[in-house]
Amino acid sequence: MTRPKAFTEREDDSLTEFEPLLQMLSHRDVLSDYERELVAGLKRRIVRIPKGGELVATHSRPSESCLVLQGFTAREVYLKSGERQITAIHVPGDFVDLHALTLKTMDHSVVALSDCEAAFVPHGELLRVIEKSQHLGRLFWLSTVIDAAIQRAWIAGIGRRSSVEHLGHLVCELFCRLEAVGLTDGQSFKFPITQPELADILGLSLVHVNRTLQDLRRRGLIVWKGGTLTVPDLKQLAAMADFDPTYLNLVVEPR
Amino acid sequence: MPRYFIDTSDGDRSILDEEGIDLADDAAARLSALDALPDMARDVIPDGDERRLSVSVRNAEGEVIYHATLTLAGHWERDDRARAAMPDGSV
Image (cartoon, rainbow over all chains, first blue to last red; front, top):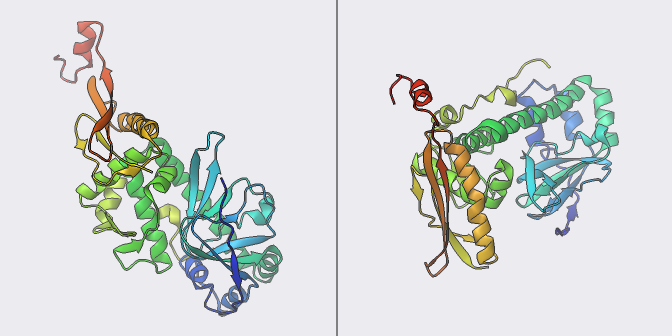
């Protein structure tokens, strides 16, 4: 599969650029002014990636880690048959490949599910900041640990939940993650994902995903119109989907 | 790519596809319909010994061009086992 590689780069040293990352970290622990300055001062190049573009290629050996600033991205695994499994979604404030700092070689690729803006931070910069603040080092570590917790929730969904619970669980998770970075209006969020992509996330056939969406709509649990997903009653959806947000670690405590 | 409408029924609930999906050709539409059957079955089985799941493909002109059913037909081989399997001991 060929992908558009129309990357455009621009210079930007705005201190507010890393706000989604600072918000993501601040939902887990208190950051000192010094730590905020360290994060905001990370050298980076800002790249806009069009929908469908690749942020990180499989088998590549990145020398930078990629932080999503705007848009939705996905980790994906392709099979020989051409079938795809999306193994993670990353939203603004998430590093998509912080693990490449230690993994070195990527075993999967990361693709833009919508038009995206991302910051590529040299590994040397991350190491410099981690050496200056062990606490920030632990928080970066925490973010990869939370990635793993999310994978556990996804495995349980793919392996054991009914389709309607699995989809409901995903919507609850995305709602919580997006709310943490200020990207919901309390009930709705932008959900720039197509039904075939949703099928690749859930590991279900496209037709069954469509059926499952209709089921959730019929019960009044979600409204999905024009790229905006509305959850009229998050508690009700969470109860139906057996969603317990503990794994997202959205708790401020010393780490 | 032509648009197809894939209607489904899991034996409890029928869903008429009103949006449709764009697929390469009739063969791709058939595959897409068949692909849904195991997913639907996984959501409703086990629940009883008889069930009929079905999928129908309509083309853009509204003509049904393909139909498939997946049938579950389970039964006990001996009556005493059937009685024992019922919660109240009756058949």
